[in-house]
Image 1: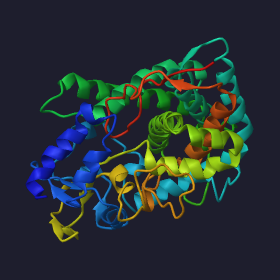
Image 2: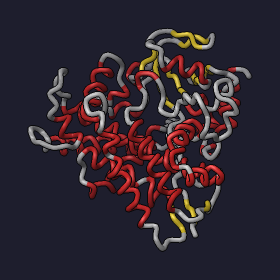
Image 3: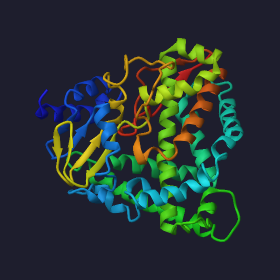
Length: 404
């Protein structure tokens, strides 16, 4: 395949018509591991090249280092640390981890297991008497948003406002000035402002007050590097709310869809609940919630697979393609919860490995085990189900199932 053919493949991947099954197109894309696009950007699609560049110190995660900044960047006065580079990224990530996980609070995530299980059980209790259930609206959406609100100290009754903001922000990530109305971008910009303002208001109430929620801990943390600024705390909370919530919704929904398509695995999980740990890892490889990292920038000219990428170029990382690369995974299009050496790219790799990965794993493990245990003869109403518009954060917008 020549490089000039790959822009058409990428357009087809990004088009909604491919959302239900982009994997054959990824296979075509992998024939050119590093492909230059018509706009001067580069697409990387093979496992070896993806892992190499994710660990490359000459790669920037700061959108401001692009030669041609992304349109949505104008709303980000203080980027979340996932959008920064060392040393600022490392400093803020260390500070965020102090109240969130090991080594300072090693039991936080696992200690939430009883509350997570109770939340899941309550949601499934609400299925009683319903012949048809929407796994997204009735379960996969309310579960992680309840967890995130509790973790941050956000009033649960404010969740409907988040739903509107999150949808607008996610839609704007995929803004294409050539094909999309500017209203799509404007709505995303306004949603970011509204969400940041709301979180800032919550934070003002937390200073110099005791409390166990994450906002309070960050607002009053006197660690060796001092406290985050209020803008940095708001950006960190924003990251947890958007990235942590959306990815978990998709992971749970993709997981239930995959199990319903593989009834023998579903029955095995029902009989062997301890299988869930390996199963979720295979799910992160096989049907991950994040398919694409839309942008990275080159600090300097870099060479990947004999292709020179000029400084400042936009680089698109096709993570889901890499996790189906047959040069790395045997029989990659087979869902195999017994797969060994499963170093997938479901949560990325390198210094930007997903901050909320441990929480998303535990939520999904509990959610899928309880759904499989308690649902009676679940069946898909439609296959494929309708998908969300985004090719970046990919998952069904609804997943209707019937039960006996």
